Image (cartoon, rainbow, N blue to C red; front, side, top):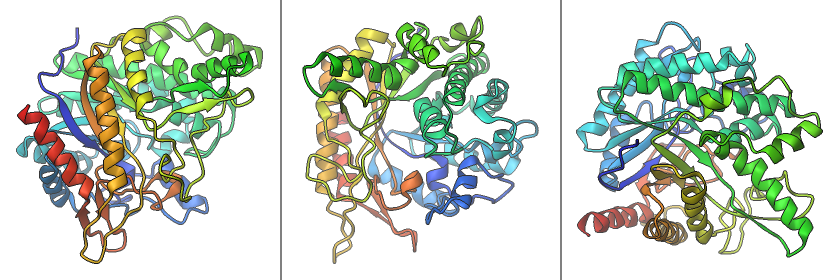
Length: 446
């Protein structure tokens, strides 16, 4: 049984590729995102990003100034194991030693994510997540990290957003590795979930008191109308976007309606799911991370389209963020309650929630990002309402700590509560950072 948080985790989050930079420094090998950024016509890359690798102490001090008691970050597999497997890179591990030790010195709990989309290119060359051997590759990596950090890291997240990795990376081709094939998508998704289960067991074997989970992104959906066609489309969308990952993680196996739908269209290789696979995927976890940004309305014909992925660089009305995403805090409350009642995890953590607004420094150097404050306030209140109604929510992490590389959108989208000038690397705490510090302090005082 999971050990519930004895205090609420108030944190911020980042990922290695989006902030570290130093893409080929100290023995690090290229990841699939390095490859994509260097081969596609992308104006922005993660080569320097926020230069976090060289500005670690400054960023640790900023975390302390914001007042968080937890920090959700990812390690770069390519720094730790440049060959994907085999001999670890001492210089890569040393960086994460400094990070973890620096957090603990500042009374900030490290929440370490093992995989946030940056697969070593050398493993992609061997088939990547579509290769069943990827389960063993990831388990080896997880075992190494658990052995090295078990004395200092209690909270582990295996994989961040398997839906994004599988669908945006292997079906829509928008994210690395840039593949567009249904069978490859379902194979990658299946192996990601198996790798999660196997890594969970490996971490627990090496650190029995560790708290292990994963972060699942979600898209709550409602029918666009009262028609039966839209209702059916919404149910299918929920299977495509949510249930296909939530159900097996919580021991229910893959949803039968989706298995039938995929098989009928020749998308699902009948040999993919082997005996014992779903048992491995359903390995018990201590907490479920929920990444939430927006909700969608589904009409017939859009049941396999994530309509929340709206246009980038627009100036939407106030009920949309600059990613084109609807602001809908009530949907977060409903989904947290759904997770509680339908899948019953011991603990729920909101591991990502935030908004992109481009408000920059004024003539005095201050960043008055009122819309982000309003977004965070409404979503924190929604989280607390779900908690009051019985959902075992034990933490909330703002995405993100720094204005970072927003994948294919580059530096045009700013989610951070800390402004970063990507030419000079100057950092400025935004008003939202001070607001969040006060909100955390208020909670601590209550």
